[in-house]
Length: 356
Image 1 (cartoon, rainbow, N blue to C red):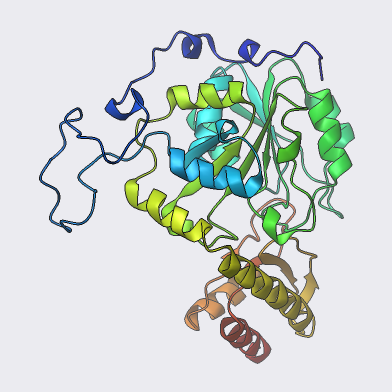
Image 2: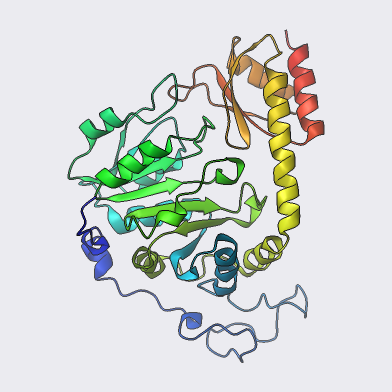
């Protein structure tokens, strides 16, 4: 990576010229005890309860929640951006750094589908560099042939979805060091892995954005809270164009409560890892299972010797819903199975054993 790297050289001109919307709550340090007469709210409360504050707009910068996350990760809260799910973060990255019909992003299929969908929404071409078929690892040589001056964003997912494996740390680092655009490293499943997160290296790599989430290991998918960790310069650009109140009051409050309960988090994480081991072994004993791929996530990629479509419908008839990904590149005849509770997993294994 160029030692003279300047993030401002990658930001679109119309974003640089943008005067951001200033919400009423952005103009001072957020204080719940203040007298709020600034945002045309209903000062008498809502029908929900006289004890809540839901008639007030939420903190637009989620200061308390960011401090809690920063404390857990041991980083500055100024290097954290919170999105309405990771999908909002991906959308914002495209808006800041890519020119429609001129620039392109690079992805490594099979991978998370929203990298491509969001790019197409913004009129940005998405170039696909397939993972190596046998190993599901990055193809560095192919990547080097593809990248050019119009390559502005690279999305890497590790542990990868839907394959479940860690991508090699040295390959990720090679791409980061050789690329002068924005690198987005999605680590949504990192807590299920033994691999160390890259977020501690954002000071070394000013073009790196790490995505974490509270949806997976923290079990808060319904709250829709995605986390971007990056340099303060990148975070400032993201804050400039986000919608004013992108994380609602309830999500912020409940997330803070959950983050205070780290003992339960580690207890549940340990159970998931134990069930993942059980499922991996149990699935390998079933005749229709051709291969169970190694996983560093909370799901397993399973290759079948029978028709995945017919088997998927069979599971549906038994009220078991898995993800049929047999139509995805390099995932022929595969299902993605999330690790459930012990009772759910044993019921699935029983029904798979009964399948003819």
